[in-house]
Length: 137
Image 1: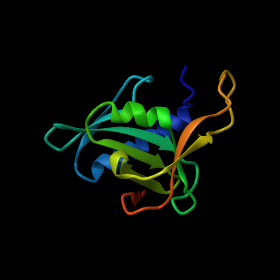
Image 2: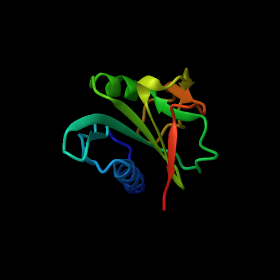
Image 3: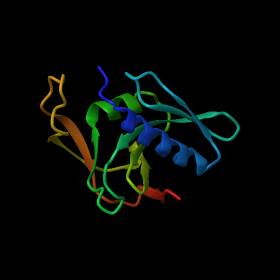
Image 4: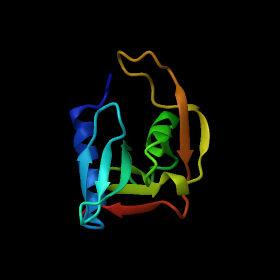
């Protein structure tokens, strides 16, 4: 079951479009039960897989950056550059998962209606050199 709202999907699309615009690339949305996107360079070569996480905060107030550990496993199992993008209110924060250092603990957002999970294994990232940001214009 997927819990993404229409607003979540709009935020996600805006974030991936900004990300690929950095290098003139493109993207392809994947199945709802997979990671979010395949990422291609300007010559249409597959260069990465990306997971986009909504972060309803400004870049300044976004830390620590959360991501479910299960999403990281899916992302790194692709065996190609794993990119995580946090879609903030005023821009994106992104980094390659294999270059980041984070803290693992139980957490996550409060359960949504229809969810049986009250907590899950999460990874939290503090500010670090491997994370970059780009503001929306």
